[in-house]
Image (cartoon, rainbow, N blue to C red; front, side, top):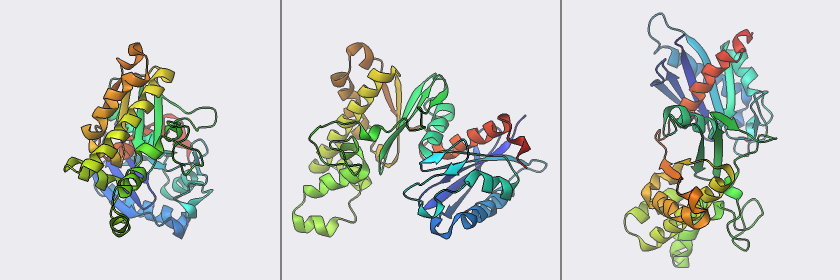
Length: 320
């Protein structure tokens, strides 16, 4: 039965909500500040107010069926609990799904944000009509969600996909995780910025430290800055090594790249494609496809809308 649902992407600074129609189109949007420091009840109440606003866009005679929401991890998707996400300190150990169920009187599903984005991409974006896919997020960090045979692969403890900490250089830079030479030290936005600042005279580096971000380095590379271009090229090669490693382990062909750094497009992705054969068997690497996200920033909201419909199918009708 056709249903109207809401997908919500709870981030460190903002919450994006979208009203999604039965044809999987986002028909209305709301954006509110997260303000996690105000605590769970406040966040849930403001989400509820946004849901009320979005319901005004429903056609006459239609009703809202359910809500799906995603958040940075770690979280327990089965119990619907946020555990201790570093960027949401005011929401640690919050039974978010249950609080939303009680406040909205609707079925609710909770999922990790990268996994939700992967589901959106798999069902509505570049992964449509595929059997398996890996979605790699390249932004402040580097992570992945693996979909095999149409299902998320979570691992024994829901920790699968931490590809940002694949070791690319045993004696490389120290990563914030404590290890050395992790993929994140090559590919993440902060690493691009750090590497670019090192190319500047010390005085200029100090003066420009705040405005140089990963996205800014990508812009400079696109504008012809030789240092920035070399850094993005190296990041692309590192991304190709990550993809090649995953392809050798998983035997999956499609790798979709999202996140803020992915806006570099072929500046990043073409070096990645060229690097894959250097780090994999020819019989494996020749099948690999690396594509940019087809949904831009809508992947998490659409993935959450898919989860919202699954919440109906999975027996959450008795939510009261």
